[in-house]
Image (cartoon, rainbow, N blue to C red; front, side, top):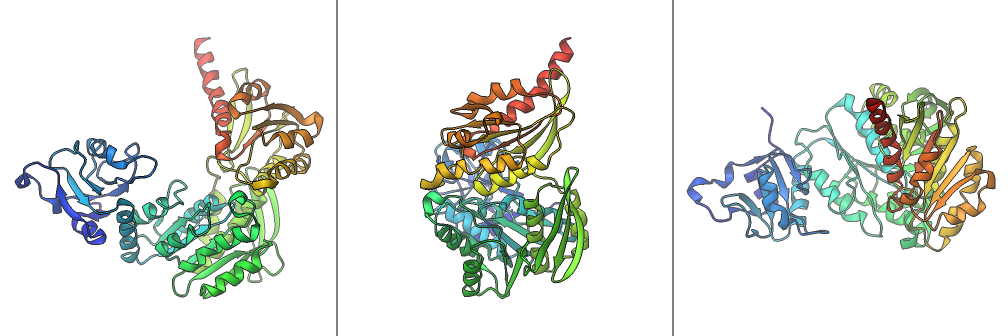
Length: 485
């Protein structure tokens, strides 16, 4: 029998809410009998038996309470009972549903005796979270969000879903403005907190890298007693991060990177097939291991992961074996072969989830390390980067050197800001420019040929993921043509 994540009494005790129902015959409904196997804020993904939390964000979640019960919700956490709520439907009524979700999160944390790791940074948060999920799995039950739930509702939602007996919890924490990380890290109270890097992301809102570093350093404020701060030794903001970690009371400082003084130091990285081979020094001990995801940046991410495992006392040997099987996630370097309708196939590297100058450079290096087959070419499809402030034109143009270093054969750019890169890129490399990702899709598709390696990268708002989806559909088109031949 599966243990319930929340019973009615537990949820009511955690939130201070009232167990009740709207209308109906109270003799036919007993509030305390319900139990929930999960927590959901979205009726589109809600699973039968979950609590539906009616958040008021982009839309008022109370509009979807009826739909939640139609999909099998066990109860709804609400601030009021909508008129269309089914009679007798179990409700947990609180003054504010977001605060109610936070209360569930706090209670979930307090009843769990596992180790918690929090991750922030300008680049690599989700990759590190997923590596941690894989690396910790051999040591016990791991809880982490399936998506990038790293904001003011995503972090408490992930924590509210933490099973009582989970051995490890991994939490990604993001921000767009100063002060946003502080309440989230206090909620999680991590035993280890990682800053992957500090880079010019969201520069428009901060103005300087120092201010971005200050905001990232907020993650140390929530460290549990005896907790460890895990810092990027190579980063130019390292000294500031170290200072803030110390001021926050971090009991231990663990560093990672290629710097000669890093505790977890990258000695060598070699691209190998679909992944990489890593040589590292850990507190002076030299080790070698394989990583299933390619790229030097991923190798550095893996060192942050190993540092976190050390901080929470998780075994290393099984973790290294798990990292060898790790593959990059969709939108963050995932690779797949795509058959073309006219025959042959290409390699698609999906980096479409988000972008800033540092991650763009890493993705282009990844393309440069890839080996086209036969007469194939390296093709870069780049969408513009947002929230970079007044230096945005120059930051786009500066990527020209990365294109050259990666031996890119064909460049497609989408968006007004990418025009600055287009103008600086070598003329022989320029294949197509358009005001939007949608407008460039047809040109990219028409250019594909057997053996090509295509890398797609851009900020979410650039919608370059549409290019990825269009390329993936070519395989479906090819199968349909074959079936009708």
